Image (cartoon, rainbow, N blue to C red):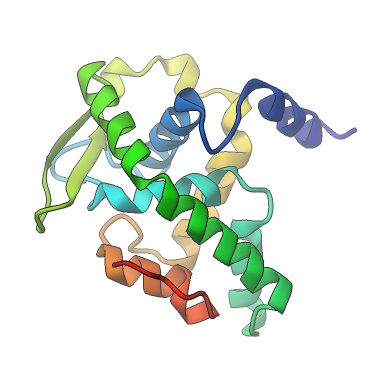
Amino acid sequence: MTDASTELAKKRIMFIKSEDFNFIAYNILVVLDVLKCDSSVRPFKDHRKLSFLVDFASSPVLAPMLERQLRLKSDLSRRDVHTLAVAYASGASRKHFVARIVNSLITKGFVEVRKGEHDLDLDVWIKREKVPETFISSDLYLLERENIKKVAAISSHIRTLTFPTFLDRFFERHGVTVWHS
């Protein structure tokens, strides 16, 4: 087993991805850290995108799949569209859970928020001084960090995209039907 697959296996044992508070919280912090969302001047706009980015961060196939599609300038295969549709459904089903996790991270002092441009969204940023340096520099989340870098390369404005634009760029354009915006 390679080091990467060993780490992935460890994480599968440690967490139940879709339901684990810590897994999602860690991934939210990784997303905010990698995208340098670390102040009210540079927030992650609209926390609802985080629900979907957890899958892009933690999946060994999603970000590389979209990166490959962009590089080759080709359409996704039916199997890839199905994989993306499953990721969309997972993200949509956990959006309220992610909102509770963001609230918990506020309470614990790891993130700050402000009301976003619309009624339902919050702008979020990490409070680096409150997050242990060992977490920020941990190799345990290397895959997640690399995947978020790939997502940022796919859409350089991921931090500031509106929620509807995010859904369009990462799901609808690739043939996934979305049921909310």
